Length: 380
Image (tube, rainbow, N blue to C red; front, side):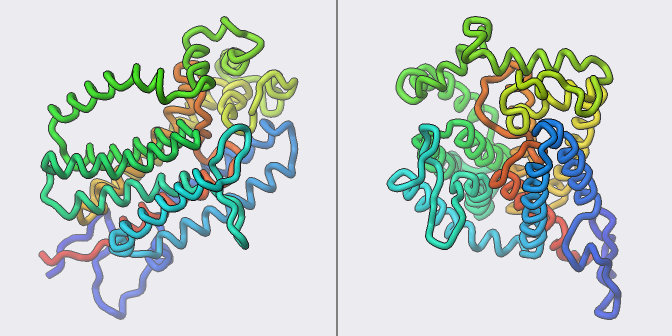
């Protein structure tokens, strides 16, 4: 006799039983619908944020279509494939990061891209957002949990090595996202609160050292601007001041779609990329922001549900870390646009105009769907 299936999935009753299209494609219908709602709404806001430039929306639509195909491909692979390939992907990722430092393509004072013959230019650091938590989950899942201190130390090394390489590009925002993804794996593995307290203490001690020896001048300026944007209202403080003005002017229900003045009169910079949430808040108001946050919350709840019900430690750790990384994207972007966090160039997930970050996020959702749909039945 077979036990009831997890999460409402029907038990496997034999070879003759028909399977739903969702089971065949290894997709979670609820998560897929929520993602489609988010992406569709994002294209509407992007049209306004790009000042009614339909070409920008078409380009974003193509990127979204490619990203959904990537998600579908990643969903087909059994989680055991990711577990088996994690070390090799990690080594390839480190090699790519090293190649970026040695002969990467530079732009705007940063060297973050690789241009290989026959391939489009890409950022290896974006791929590490998937690979680092995958590698950390692979290592910790091979040992008894909660992990011993030596295992925690090795896990931290797995996370900090690529993080340090990304900081050298320099790309502090991506480095923090990669590091956070890996640290969530360590946290979900069940480390003691004493170790967490010790880590927080070491980070507090290291913060002044980072300020003087690691952070670049423009990164320090971002922190100083956060503390006092009025100190340079026409320079470094312009973005935050205009963003907060746009958000506040939206009121309860907003000025209406395409009626935002801050973006359409070109007061708000980067209105279709990093600061697109300010466009949404100005045109759709508090109600629009509530709707956006509700969709994000439902996606996070569904992903956490998948993580909690994963069949093994590797799946739980990886799914949980990818879910919380998605949350960090939202938290950091909304925080920086609201003037609560420094501007670090983190896009609003699946809303901001972009390419590599969208594909990476959808690949992560594909991994989550793989964890959910490849569960094996357990005998009663």
